[in-house]
Length: 449
Image 1 (spheres, helix red, strand yellow):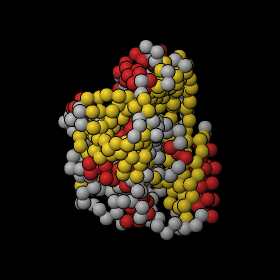
Image 2 (image 1 turned 180 degrees about the vertical axis):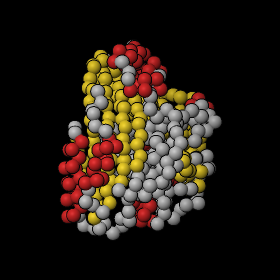
Image 3 (image 1 turned 180 degrees about the horizontal axis):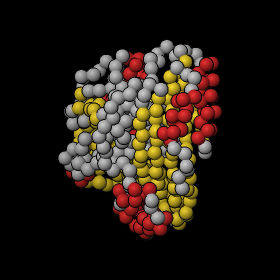
Image 4 (image 1 turned 120 degrees about the vertical axis):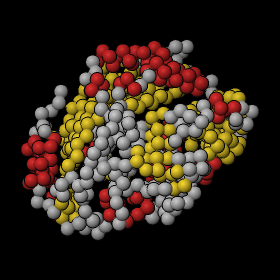
């Protein structure tokens, strides 16, 4: 049930009483429902509604930020006061120029809010999860844990310069782990609507991944391979692209792509787009989380670095304009959106697909590995180096999948690997804020543990 506080009135009240030179108010109301799976059974879980408020105060380049959840409009007054007090005692930030000025925001985006998802009956949700479980739990495969999370939210951001923007959205996130003997499988699905997830296909995929893992053997030796990486893991690896293109890293002198606009940084087969208005995108909105209009722009186009990403703060440092990339919201949960100021981040990252299906990528591989799961797909964004533990994969020899393997390390450097992309799948998958295909990288090292 929605809490009866008008977010716009709340923001207006905060701006009226603020004594700061500049003030920004971000308010968000959200309802999050979690339906849990435990030991193969559905548990009706939590249903929480909250209003969160975060306020930024600026006094002679001194910046204060304070946030909390509230139940009544007048509670915002203490947040205004705390933010103001923090600003008074903070050291000046000489790099700060100004909060964003208002710009015209127009247009519409499809599939960011789904009324039927927001109003979904618990029985419908349980039916979806039952289909998922029934298609997973067979031949000794059991779902050990998981959840289906449904979030409805609306936010308003206003500032004392005249920015005034609001947005409404829905998010759906399915996560589950399953086991068969010593093998474990994991599945993640993302959408802005309940109907956007194929629960039977998700269950079938989890079944296949788990069954494969149960037959996996420890890899031995060292081998140079072509690595075909599944979307769930390749999204994590490619998160270095918007990070390296972030105005924050550029300004800190930490990005490997400083002064490389117009230069080749990847294979000509790679095009990566940041699209804040992608239909069905989990972070899509007409403006970002500080009220600056979102845009569509290529980060990499046919291997050439085309654009950096900027929020207002980092754009001010470089004397350029924000690209609409100031964000607070996540994709699996937005509980903490109000607790932090915006940071420079990607909106929806689209890796343009290729023309091949997964069977083509495999059949064209002489010596390689098809990887479904890493322990954690983290890459150092500064150096680009990685050593990723392989948990679920299949060796490929002469164009055919052979032995299932685990307990290996895939090693290399992502900035080198981007120049050795040897194929992209033709189907894309939403993985959080990424829309990605299978990607094949050549000349990586597979090392047995």
